[in-house]
Length: 162
Image (tube, rainbow, N blue to C red):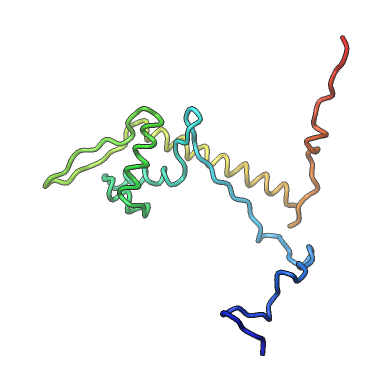
């Protein structure tokens, strides 16, 4: 029976054990590439996937609170994100109407809708390009030979003299 200390089995591989050979796992279809993208405005973060989900949730539900619930973020976090986007742009993205007995409401401005459209179209294009690039890199389930020269080889020769 293997020795056990503090709930850790000593029968498995230890950090000092050699790594499995590089050929043991077949990468094939198990390996995928993923990208995360966001938009900036004047070099400042504007929005990413969670912010877009928030805006879409507000558009779909008609309230900030329900939009937050749809994205599983707290109301306070949502308000901070809306303020951050509006502050970066210097323009309003969400128009609210105070509630009372008839409940409040929130709608997106045309600018917010346009940002969602730009983000979605750009993200789709990036995803397609990424998939194509990954397929090119992975030929027959194995990384293909490097096609681009190393950075030192890409340097342009210096022309001296006149």
